[in-house]
Image (cartoon, rainbow, N blue to C red):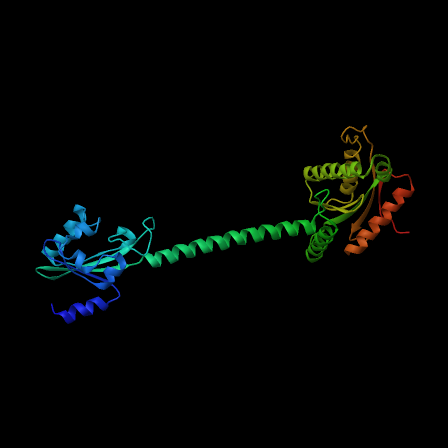
Length: 322
């Protein structure tokens, strides 16, 4: 082959290696020298087996011999076969992948075209890590958003839904009932703990807070044990609200009110203090007979509560128009 031809091979952006019948290097272009840091002069006449651990195995040596005999070219994918030659651009612990196209030039010469994809795989690997990092950050953001949403919609002391959450949920439920053909009715319960102020004044607000938390736990468990859909929230201070549905009349709501009163009847044993007795007053309004809006239902439940408070506390009443 002419010098002009070899000069052309040196300019190619791909590795070119020519081997003789005995697998010895007869040409090693500049691209191979730069990638491996092995000069052409240093590798000429060396067996390819001494330059590539892959070709040192009998499997790959037989591939070269078979191509000489049959003339059929072979493509060896780096994704499957991995590394054929060292790559000075990457550390030894980095995964190197090289494609090899092997073709017979004539009876005495094989052509190896070497394409190094290590840089490409490195970029893909880095991109995957970057994507994993973004996904992790996205998950963290979602968790923070969920935590912020929960804080915004829940009472920090009792962990019950707060006023905003209750108003939104009740609005959705009323719209659902208005837009459906269901004959269900709904009750709003306005609950106030009787004389909690006295406990706060006597034992301190920390004890009062513990009572509020235990009351929330008791009522939550009671509502979960009931088969109907209920939503309870802390409105403010010692005031709680809940709504409940019924398709069997207001008797169900009366039963629920009695259960609520029974549930808080046992003493509250807070830390080392004597058992503390708590009672509650409950006012109830009914959708749609008393009102059809959120504000009106809460207002009328509050009016019913006021009547309970002024008539001795520790009981419940349904709203009655004056």
